[in-house]
Length: 423
Image 1: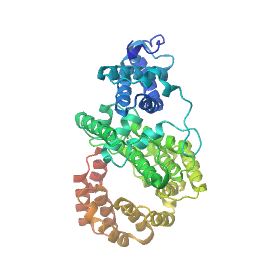
Image 2: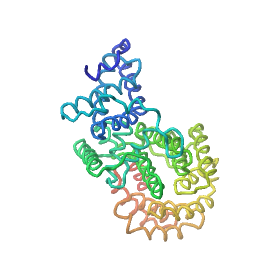
Image 3: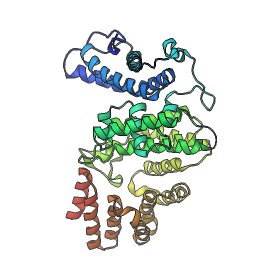
Image 4: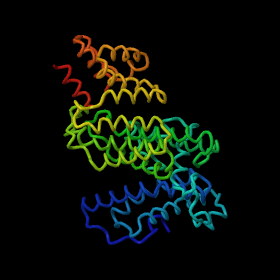
């Protein structure tokens, strides 16, 4: 029996784009919720992450075609599970390494696992930590997470990470080979390295969210599917690790950012925070962000993601840009430096510093970041141009804006910078 025979479909949707769109929407939802669970279960059952991940990816591709033409099955998650299991069995049989424990499928019939904190484990979490293992290169961590945990196809990952399908496929294959050859465990770490590993996972989720924005050659609209995947994944981690304050901090941060999305991008144009129509901000997401941040604060384990979220809360709580408590924002950035002294954090701090102590003091701070940022960051040049313009150094500001233009490929950002240059 083929994977597409795993469950009897419902009566097909009426032909046409509406039925296809409904099928694709449901598949995207099922993949997000179930693909990582299935991959984790098949990894346990077959003893191979590579076999499991390939089987699930093939099942997703099969579902994309089958559900469009034959209709949505009555139990979509079970359909995907059985299709993936058949794919795995086919591969194992071809390779003549089928094991007795696969035939009995005992692993799939076991009761729920127990998490590191005593509650039921989310089987997606060990998979996520395995994909984000420090032995893997950062680009491989991101690609493998998008594939194995979020269920994206190679083509989708290539688009999301501005790469080619060939390069993306090779990156994923190398990462899976590294996991197999190095014996990288698919488990949630415990003990002294747990906090550092969690921070790495949260960083990858944050990078995923950032990758959804400022796409080369595109307008200001974010890749909403990728942004939503990142927000969903942050929620999965926070729910699975209820006493991990930093997980709640990142969940809060991404909700604050997502709440502003409809005001940040209007008709394909980028609108800076100071100019956004705050009535367009999503009140439900803002409320959820505050709840997550308060939950983190009650745990009394401060960290960088909570401070990032607290800074975002300062902007969210201001009735308008002029009402922003910049002294509080600067104070939070000063606290953040104890956890993260990266050039980007220091650049963002300089923007707050300009509001509190003036553009001259801030410009001195920005100029100290020339070596790490000037050759690669259009934002460094754009911030510097704004400060120079505030100081009346218009010729230098124009030169800085022109250099920022050279370094950005996003069309909305280019139009924004061109507007400054033309003034």
